[in-house]
Image 1 (cartoon, one colour):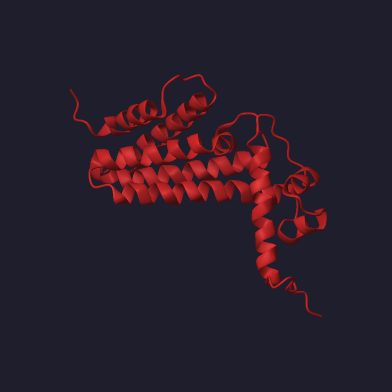
Image 2 (cartoon, rainbow, N blue to C red):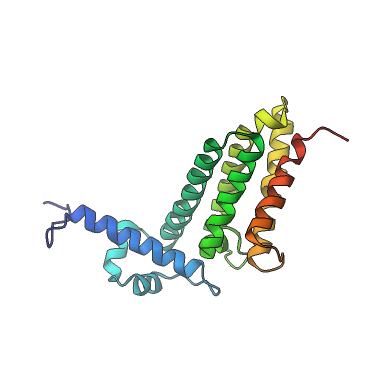
Length: 203
């Protein structure tokens, strides 16, 4: 018995499955990143405009979709931020590039910011994903900060990176919620200055 998706209308079956998966992930992001987040299999299928049976081609349940949505967003941010940092030449330039990429990404698509930071999303799946992504960003910052923080002790480097990543996440959440009233450019400049502060010699 052949369980592989058949071609239809000249489109390969596997490609159609992949396209529906992307559509469901986008619909999941729309619902999870809305002001009043609600995610059900029925709701996401309605949003995506696909029959419920197609949901189970790619996802076992709602939690699997939530994980996929989060992973898609966090991977895109991590990869694009690292690329922006790598393209910059100076220490300050790298800090500015990294912060600017993160801020620009969530400013252009606030759904992403709400997915990453909103306290309204309390799913255990997302809570675990947030812990894991925080660890990823701590690792990224620690790896990039070795050169300009000049901390040889890995414990101190991890402590500094953990403090800065946690503070940045809270700051971005407050900015998205309107508690911090500054422009995107001001937010980038201030956060970059804070990020670079540990690299400055003591006064």
